[in-house]
Length: 461
Ligand SMILES: Cc1ncc(COP(=O)(O)O)c(C=O)c1O
Image 1: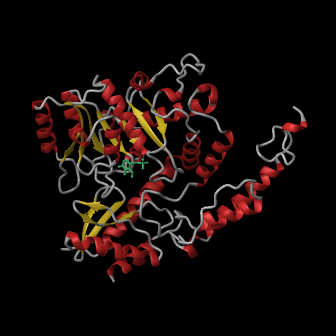
Image 2: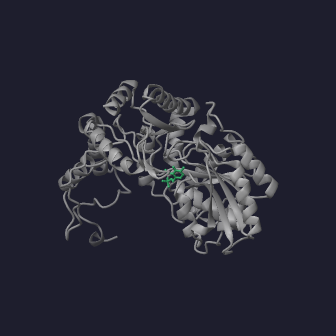
């Protein structure tokens, strides 16, 4: 190559020769900035956003390193900080340190999970890790899975496979049954699948937020009278607002009797199935055809990290295979862009693998147990005279002052969320059953009992 093709500073890409000193310096500097941001979280609070924050767009010439590092610092200074102990609003826990490392390695590798030839070791790693999870939850030798960028996409992969398996293709009469407390991603899935809300049948929940079996049976009978074709029933293992678990055993028996695909949305609670923690209602999940597990939501695998596990891998192959004409294939190895809706995909599995290898089963269990302990401590100490409390066996609690009218719940939760953020606690305000609630998600490993006591004191005022 002539000199003309080589940039004088040689800084655009890693060098294939020499020691890459410049990149090492940049990484060291970025690491220092990131770690300073972590350690200043206590001072800045969970959501230190300054309204004057400016988004600076690319210019004619590239900017200097100095400019870029000061822009990175401004970006961090104005970001949600998941490591702050008051970050309790959502399913976004602090990142595991080995997962941060995994993201860095995946970015540098820049391999593509589309195909084996673009990611040989990582393809095998993803396949093995999915199989490991599938076996852990009790699936047999035909099982496996596919990673995807988030729980929504894992659910979508499952439902497309279920519809294909039922031979319903583009049938406009096909329907999906979910509980009224199931996640909003199912509305999106239905739309993406060319259907609409009339194809999404909502089953009532009982007073614990679990799918009501008698309403499920009634709806199934109604569907059959109306000649609607059911391609799947979704059981939620951990609802978004209160962490309830649908009665999986009963639902799986109904699915078996009627030959209906059972998908479990375990985005929140699925990971508990690989631990020995006794969780009420978490049983029989191996009876499902597919299950979403989303380790980004509770154990701190960095986003995004979600798996769809299936009891029979051949259904994913039959559903998504196109032949991928511009890619070579190797006998007995699946090109992983051919078993889900995503084509090109980063090597996200590295941060999951490193995170799990670092924690081991005991570490995973320790994190999960601690989240339940925090939830129990919160519930034990919150005033039962003042608040209506909605929770389940997992680590999520929604609550509201007793006898508050729906119209007043909006103003009360807004005021409270603002008051709390000024005191460095971030809670969310989901709309649920026509009212706004405050919700606390106890998945933050940095939150100690003393923080929860302080939060309860603020809520009581
Ligand atoms: C129960 C449940 N399912 C699915 C999802 C969607 O996951 P994601 O945001 O990773 O797409 C969520 C998100 O919170 C959820 O709570």
